[in-house]
Every structure is written in structure tokens, then in C-alpha cells.
Image (tube, rainbow, N blue to C red; front, side, top):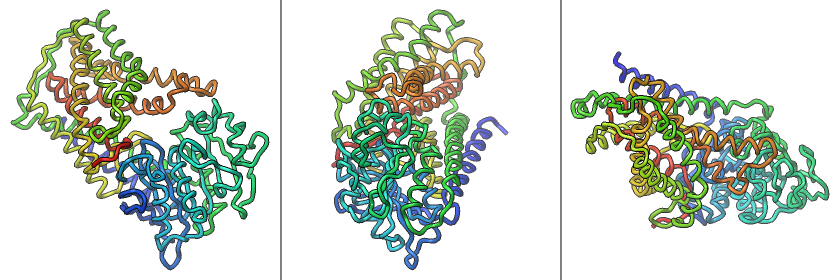
Length: 565
């Protein structure tokens, strides 16, 4: 079997095996999953995944839980919680907040969509309206707090994961409100100052803001229930030893929420909190994500064997004879400059390009400004270092083969969504289908990101390709150039967090968390760029593929802060 056919076959097998595994886990115990859309009374069109356990029917309504993701995530991010809730006999509505996923923008509006989500959950005849729980992570906590404020008697218990009551986005908490609250606030949560006014998350028990919610006058004791369940004043604090985004993949954090709802909601099918299977779904979608990358490479290789694209096929012509000081300097600069400019260029992006009708996604715009300014720096460095290579330039066919490659990858995701109701993801890294509205944003952001990759990948191959290098050396060099800087950056941020309780840059928790996604994405980009260059002697096909992939990735996964006409 030819190489390209093997790659395509391996990619398809991994995609199918991983997606089927994920599907079997999320539907374990005859759980049915429905993709629902509903019109909000306050917001616009809302989106959610509805998990329906076998025990729920109009004749025998089951307890219900509204589960909501955090900022710049979507409904699928709560899968670990949703799967385990549904396994215990709860009907789960995993909501897309306003301006996230497939819910209409803007983000932050209409109680983040929480009141409409709870209203929809309560409207279902399969849900016991006297036994409803609310669970939200980070900004999702503010979403369920907004729902609780709108329907103070419409729920029985609440779990806040890495979230808080009070300003800037929620009503003040007290010993009486919200009802029966469990706070799961991780020991290394990056947002401790924002949420509870303490510089170190491990000291959250000393927060006077927290004392007010617990009705306490001394440090809150972890795991001890304050107040009374029957009066709706029960409170408990849990502090799993993870970070803010790791709440999604923490059996401990998920287990605490299971314990609390089984204590406060009647009905369902009790299981020990340690009985969890959700992580097999996470493994399945990770395998599918790896298969997606292999499928893209195999598709590109197969297209090169077609007569129309055959003229693109060419081995790389390398002009650099050996690794010298220029090579080392190029590698060091490519790895370090994007990281050294990260915070400053993000700040400029937020200042120069606030969300608007044309560029409605704030963080996507910040990343775009960062990318374009780094492209300018790359051009300047190329002029100084004078890296050169005999690149082949066939613009039209390079663009065409890249578009076809990504379209086939997108079609595979459509098939996976249709057959299994899953996507390609691991933790917070996810490729998901775009809505029609998001596709419009995709077209707006595509050109700037493609320009960035064209400049970056030209410099990568001109500066680091060495005659006689094995494929392994070339892949490792390019992966190091594009992702090593972010690995070092994250280590420098998180080692202090785990040692002394604070990020190195404690004033930038959101952007530090955003940078986590850069590490796997830049490694993926390096692999695609190296693979396509070695087969075409050109940086163009890889640049266009990466531009398409990264733009799709971002607009489908980011929040939309501006209302779009």
C-alpha cells in the first residue's frame, strides 16, 4: 500500500475508533443526547446539548441539572460533569452561554443565557421541577447565579466550580442566597483575586467575601457543611489540588459535585462519586483529534498524486549547509520572540481593536494583532539574517490543494458529529463545526492569519532547513522553533503557581490560560508545515492549511462579544 493511502487509512481508523469510543461512553446506560435550539425570552436563539437518562419520562420525571461552561469554552467542555450527572439519572442541559458555541451573541448579555436555560429545562415534561440543580464553571457560575436570581424558587442546590458570587458579574452572596451551595475552588486556581479577593487560591478559606456567603466569622473549614439543607442555607467548600481549567478533567472536582447533588436532589440513580467513566470519552476524542491530523496529512499526500497537483510535488531544495550560529540564533528568535511579545501585543490588540461588527471576537482579534505584529518582526529578522532557500511558488494550486485538504478534514468532522455527536478535542483544545454566523467571522479573520503563517513558515524553512537532515531532525527543529518558547513560558508561569501559590504574571491569568492552547496548536502547525514543505519545496500549501485550520479553530471556539447584524 502506498504511503498516502496508509496515512489516510490510519487517520480514518483513528477518527472512527476514537469517536465511537467517545459516543459509547457518553451514551452509556442508554443515555440519549439531543442537540437542542430554543428561543430565549431574554436572549436570542440558544443552543444546548440535552442528556436524557433512560429513567426520565413524562410519566416519571427525573431531577434536572443546568450545567454551564466558562468563558471562551462551549457546551461540550462540561462533558465530564454532564456524563456523570446523566449516569446518575439526572436530565442535563449543557448550555452554550450567549455569544458562545451556537448561541446568539453577544457574550455577557442577558444573564449569560442562564435564566433562559433554566426556563427551558423547567419546561421539559421529563424533568421534576422540584428537584433541579445548577452547576457552572468560572463564568458559567455567574450564568447559573443569574438563573438563580431570576428563579429563586426554581432550583434546590448549586455547585460553583472556580467561580464566585458578587461583582463584577453576579449578585452578592449571603448566608441565605444562593440555595444550598457547594463551592469547588481549586487549590491552584488562577483567578483567586478576581473571584474571592485573595492572592493565593489555597487561602480562599480566609476570604472575608467567602465568610459572608458561609455565615462564618473565621476561616471556612474544607469539607464541613455549614447551614441546613432543609432551610436552603447549606454551604460547603472543597479545594481539589488542580488549576482553574483543570476542573474540567479532575475526577476529584467532578466527584464533589456528584456528592453534593446526590445529597440535595431527590430521585435519580445513586452511584458512588468515585464511579466515573467520563475520561474514556476524553481519551476517545483525543484519539480522534490525532486521527484528524493524520487524515489531513494523508489527504494532502493523496492529492499530490492527482495529475492536476502533480506539478507541486518536489523534494526540498536546501541552501543551508550546516548548523551554525545563524541557525542557532534563528531557532532561538523564532521560539522566544512570539512569547516575549505575547502580553504586550495582546494589550495593544485589546486597545486597538475592541469588538465590533466587523471584528466581533475580542480574543481572536487580540491574537490576530499579535500574529500580524510578529509577522512584521519576522520579515525584519529575515532581512537581517538573510536566510534563503530555493522555494517553489505556485500560488493558485497551492491554495487549491490546501483548501481541498481542509475541506475533506471538515467533512470528516461533519460525519463524526452526525454519526456520534462528538467532535475532535482534548480538554480545552477542540475543533468543532462552525455555525453559519461563525463562518462569516472565519472569512473576516482568515486573510490576516494566513499572512502570518506565510511569513512565519517561509522564515522557518529558510532559516532552519539543513542539507542532509533526516526527517526526524527537521520535524524536531521546527516543532522546537514554534512551540518550545510556549512550553518554557508555561513552565515559568505555573511552577511559581504550584510552589508559592501565584502565577509569575499574576495580573494576566486569562492570557496565561489562553496560552495553554498555543502549545499543542503550534506543535501541530510545525508538523503540518514540515510535512507539506518536504513534499513540495514550498511554504505556501502549509501556510494556507494552517491559516484555514487556526482561523476555523478560533472562531468556532471563542466568545463573540459584539452583536452581529
